[in-house]
Amino acid sequence: MPFLGGADYSIADMASYPWVVPWQRQQQNLEDFPSLKRWFETIAARPATIRAYEKGKDLSVRPSVTEEGKKILFGQTARSGSR
Image (cartoon, rainbow, N blue to C red):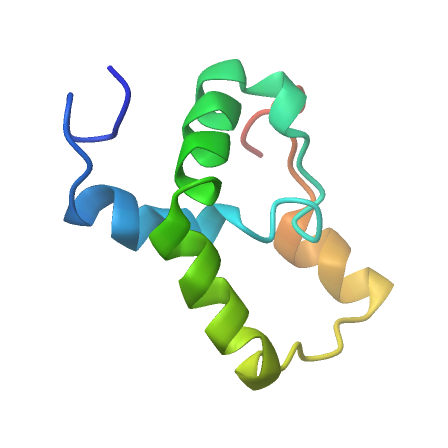
């Protein structure tokens, strides 16, 4: 299944992709999720995705998050499971 809703790219892919974009800041490793990594790279390579993120680059403002805040927000990994 190449996309979240099946064989075709859909609104599910459009809505989900931005949540995966900051995977590194969320202290995740896409290598731990091979299917997610394949999907993410497929969406990232779409010309429309590239154009959209290029247009939004100047609008993107990232708030500061402390190291303690990162631990609270993003302390889980695929290996640690839920707490």
